[in-house]
Length: 267
Picture 1: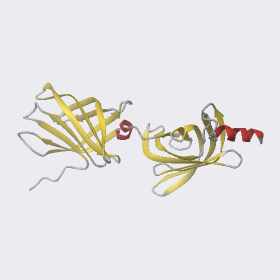
Picture 2: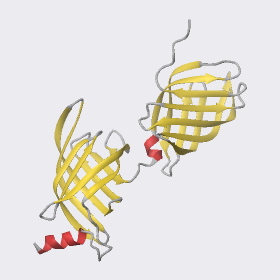
Picture 3: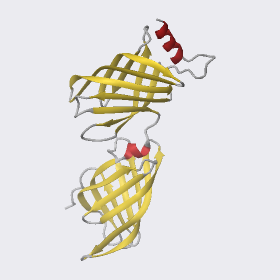
């Protein structure tokens, strides 16, 4: 009983001790999911709820629209300096298309405050071993926008308009510093690469801009041209427009990637 009481005192926020941490509460943040088949798949706007049990342990509840429901009923709590650490095991309900199964999971956490916490859910039996890393705060925008955007391109210049090409794609890769690497490889238009595109939040959407050089030509002869990229996307990545502008080609060439398939040709 004395041991349990000392843990609770160490982890409860006291008025006279600024070093103590209250671990109970609702934590808002994002998760990065990793397994044998993918790495750092991000899910923004996630919430983990931790409550204190009467015996000094903690109950953890995490319900994710992407990954399912996780429940840990008696995580052990310990304190060191300004950090409370939690560890325990429980169950998660995961599945697809309405069919769910129960899996064992483990949980660890390091909590400095309600706005500074890291937590890990590990599910060994799912996809060769899945790990969900939860972090408080807003999701990094470069990780949020990273991915492959597929659709069709609409090319326009001084000599033609609305030249469509299906099955095109642009890949955005997080640089880890809040910027994006942008790569567009097209059999029709060449390879466009932007090493560091800057990101801006625009209402509910995001925009990104950058510049680079593209090799373009005909008959085997190519030349390098300056270009700029201007992109816009929503968080769901299903409504976007990514435009590459090459001023020195054909009186000003723009190639825009849009979701879906190209419009049918007018008769």
